[in-house]
Image 1: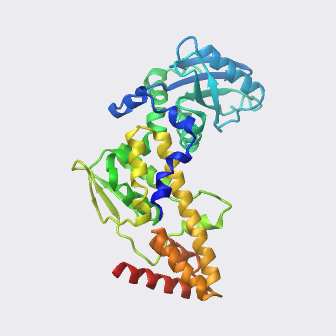
Image 2 (image 1 turned 30 degrees about the horizontal axis):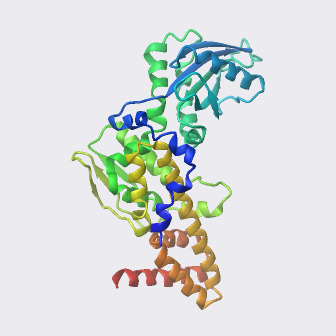
Image 3 (image 1 turned 30 degrees about the vertical axis):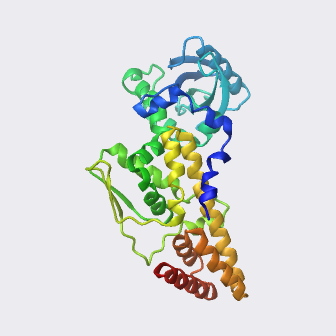
Length: 365
């Protein structure tokens, strides 16, 4: 049912976005070479910007400074909140996505009314649309600089600040790509674990790999997808009475060995889309596919909720609900979350029990 939909996922992504990352230079990521990513940090005092450090070509940095000054004069940069736009600079790419964030200095007791002082951090690479997919990661990464930006002199520029800034792309954008490269077609087990609130344990690996897997699971889960959507909250309810076996990833072998693996047809149907994007070394496309995965799960949960409500009054709706669960390939996850959400509604729980029995019979047939 979902094979044709999966094949169209890449087509649903803006063509210009994909073309930005199909060049031979980007293919260098397969050799773990970081290409065409830049950073700049300015000291911001009053209304003036003073360059502290930049990886941009010398002719491009003044162009960026002019752009940032314009944004600041319009009040477009708010403290601690990243702003993403397209900038045109004298670099090989000419037009790139640019993430800018103003980190305001803490006000001292001697100058309680001091305003506008701090640092402006800029990350450039890829496209505006691509960077927007990683806005939360970029915001968090910039906040990690706070402790290193205590004095205007920045005596720790070479030892702390510059190495940290130079790693923004690897640390904020590439983690999803690294996880897909690590587990390959086993990515479906991680997707299922994320939807099913299963703890994932990574053994015999470095801290970066553990952090990458943890961040992938968090990104693939449905928690926080929409604060206004009660369906999202229901999807994120852990089912306290069920005990899930941890998914174990043992990195002592190559490729890693996975234990206690569980997947379903829905998660399996996304494997090829992830592998194709990873083969093209396109982390932005990978993130877009991950967002599509989550949105499809939300849509299916909405459909199940509607069918359950209708089934309380119609046997035909119950039949349609059975057909839907059989076709969607994600019935186990959807029903578990539906039971958690409808735990205080006896009629709905009775219908869910019927549906669970139906799925059990289908799996044994």
